[in-house]
Image (cartoon, rainbow over all chains, first blue to last red; front, side):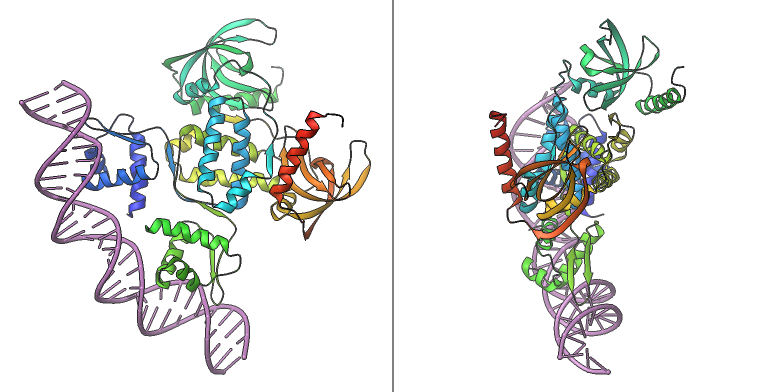
Length: 232
Length: 232
DNA sequence: AACGCTGCTGCCAGAATCTGACAGTAGGGT
DNA sequence: ACCCTACTGTCAGATTCTGGCAGCAGCGTT
């Protein structure tokens, strides 16, 4: 196994552990001496990997991921850049900042001529959506990622407010609105919630009892069924 | 200089040449023996770089670009994936295919757990726009990239058709429509053209006499001016 | 047909790098 | 006080990389 492959493996192993891991453990898992492990860690940190080591504890990889060298065609790069710009325009602050950061990272490694092309590029996205949401969509995405129940107040189309506890599993981006798809505990059914009508977000630590992928699949089936019998 | 850095350099050097280059030249430019160069080329090809070598001619890098190893946070990856999905939904066939390809490449290198997350992910984009365009936006983007004049028929809001020859420099993606921004030779002014009203595209080989970046800058100034004096 | 240029592969010895082991310093937790 | 840990320096042996050489095959020109 070449050195560069091993470095990638090291990242993957670190990803698996959430708690700090000792260098000794890591070295054992990769079949390599501790000394070499220290050198590998140093190399990765030199390449910008957010690995933190503390004496008496071990190593932790801050949540993230390393993309190995990858070839893209000009059009693929353009597609990624255009898409990231679109995301950067979305009202979801955390996500749009992430998109901006990602663009900056990509631009930093592009050869000069290509970077110029992108700076002054040719692919523009429309203006930022005007609709204001008074909740932090980042919180919602976190609940989705961690499969946690989420409470909030919902104001429906008629204006009536109700309190909800749901299992959120997806976030939809439409032209004007963002929609949270979830299983609603109160109603015992799949429901969609427009983000601009939600308020008083109350994230919990309670894990909901189903896997997100499963919910997503069932929800799609439900959607299909509704499409076939529109007024059931 | 480490080997991996040298490989990256090699790509950049190859990018510069448009015509085939002999391995000897490349080896000289990098200060390395021919034998090593052959090995480097083989390594790059093994990593998926589209380098083609032909006996009696030399090496050519098909247009494209190699992204070196890069760290992204979870949110940055999500942003890129979401953005690419949005692009994949656009009616611009070539670009949306490129987005799909890029997603596939990224998914291929993601660790299993993260890939699952993305497959069943959580971030969805709205339905594909319904508006049909009867021109190939890929042709337009190519004209923009290469700074070539472009001819076409335009049907304005009133329905009147006219023939245009323009210097296209930007492509805008709005909620429903795509718009080509260009300097119009006939009108001697910056004009915007809705893609759905364009037809009979006639790409030329004639390079237009200004740099794209310059046109873009001037156009922005013009827009600002119009904003201040709305009915000038 | 012959020649030169080129890509490409196998081989091998020397150079460069990587690796493992040991020793030692410093910080954190119990 | 003790143990566990991160981290650094050093050095010899293992591993990999590199350059030179020889040889085969495809392409274009003469």
